[in-house]
Length: 167
Image 1 (tube, rainbow, N blue to C red):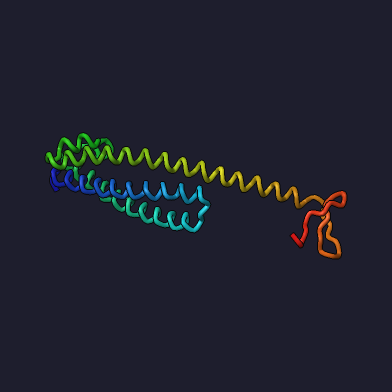
Image 2 (spheres, one colour):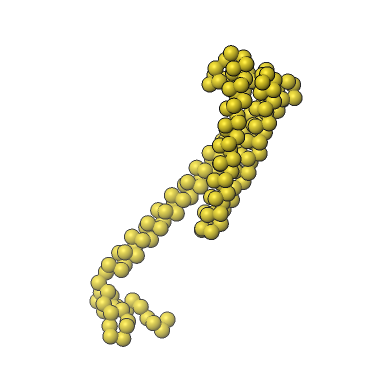
């Protein structure tokens, strides 16, 4: 495989990665809405969809590394040290433009995904904290010495009624 062919292959792989990253960002944004709405069913569906997209991205990563390795072997450079700009310089003009534009799109998508995931993490942490506070509050309320009367009503400390079945 020539460096030109490998660079063209890399351009195709990066284009597909960019498309998948856009889908991943849309799913991540939808996750935020599901978290805010406490829609667990929707969130579960979105997490499954996200996992599928990540599996596809992992497969594309293998293809990307194959193309980079081919370029490195053909040029005598280290695959770890190759930059996208260096690869673009080896490519045909059309592939060069695709590589540079797609590389920038992927960079922006990666930053947007990191931001969206950070927002979702903060929302989930806040939600977990709220649930924990409510749990502690309810444990505190329940732990007070409630007594139940023969008629099924509950009485709190100092004879106060805490539950009225007629309400």
